[in-house]
Image (tube, rainbow, N blue to C red; front, side, top):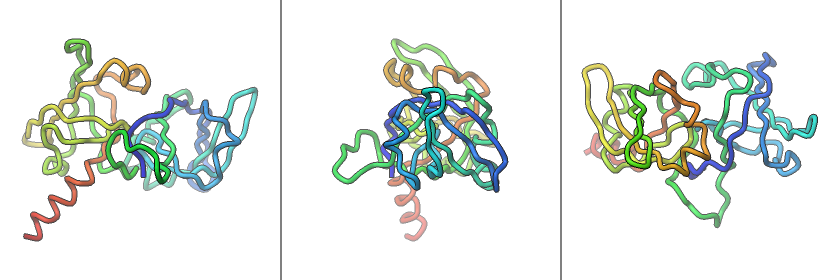
Length: 203
């Protein structure tokens, strides 16, 4: 499990076919501290560290990604130097600073609007229609692994548009500063919203 609080922004060093796809990601965290088999949220996707190392003074870890994962997330868009939001899995006793995030992507959204709003950045995201029942104003959502609050929702014929406001700190310590209109982002709905919707269906 994760909290949606990004610990650092890494970047892709290499992508190569190896069984499925092996992706090597540069990180600031010492490679010696990353256990093989550890779960790491990479832009909101829970991936497993299968190798670690240091090359030219740069720490890195590698993950293997299946074709299925690439097909339902933005991982197929990654190229060398793509910036990646990273968060290690939550340990027992650690503070839950954001909200409970599983690292299982529910859909891919597309940024439709991006503009300053006060001291923050307003970001409008078009999400698949299937996620509409789980999006509510003041509810939580993970966008590329970042725990955020939904500030508005608009149901449309073919999709649902939701808006979020990114404070300067979050903008500075995540990869959102590199995003633009048309960028695709991984979305994970709030776990609580998922269960509430299921209970309503059962009732």
